Image (cartoon, rainbow, N blue to C red; front, side, top):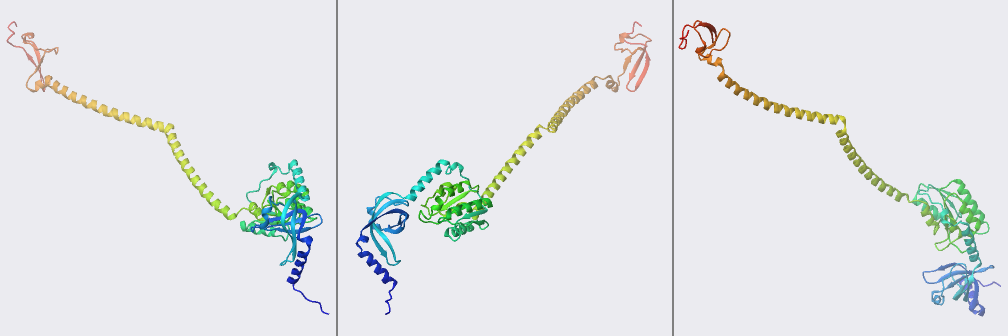
Length: 403
């Protein structure tokens, strides 16, 4: 006899009806630790409840959120009430929670808090010990899963921002029992290799998925790296011990690439602007220097011996010119006065009188005779004319009666 064949939808519907007819599953309370909690834009809350032996998917619809007076976070221990049902499209059973109450903190979250407080006291998280990222990263090291989306995001964004960057990938296991040692070995390898920056991380997940980055040994390996390390674990709301131990935390692997790798085009644009500013500043400075040099040159020329000698020479030439002009005026005045004196002398000169027919009379001793009373009869006198002289003898005169 041939068995019946059912469709997937028929099977899922049958199982859903079985769940809905089970009284225990229609009204149940489950205690467990919250992980992978997501608040959807629709208002629904999706999360996982787990304990040491297993996990179950859960959802609280927006219509039931009014009964929730606190915010669900990973690691929180809760008691969720509701029903177990089957989502027919995926064939997955889950808890449809209509009430949630706090029941304490989960084991993993408690371990996280304890380790964080312990390492904080050792100074591993101290900002003073953080290394600064280089301004320009030419060689980027990546420690993450070889096939993960985180690696693709980091590589794509890094090459888009700087096509000339060298990327060194050191694949490692990021989840499970072997993840701790694998991550530590990858960090040590990249640190020895000599990259400029290391990005260590993975994509999002539950607190269990990310636990390798909450290990004390991984935190110490991050702290001991000589190379600056960016922690890029999970999503923006995910925090791990690695985030505190690394030199810098990025909200996502993509954000880590943007922090590590400079946008070369923007950098070149900024360089061009700075070049223009520097050129303008240099030209301004050169202009100021030229002005100062010209000023100093003028001062040096003014203070130099040659300049002083030239100034004294100009002064001497000026004085000489004034003296010549003054002497000329004096000479002209004296010449004029001499001419006047000459005319006067000519008027008084005997020679000029002689020109008129007069004679100059002297005795033998050349003494002037200006009166007839000085003459005696038979005295010899000399008569000087314009063109010569002649001797004469006194014979008679009006006043020579005594002779």
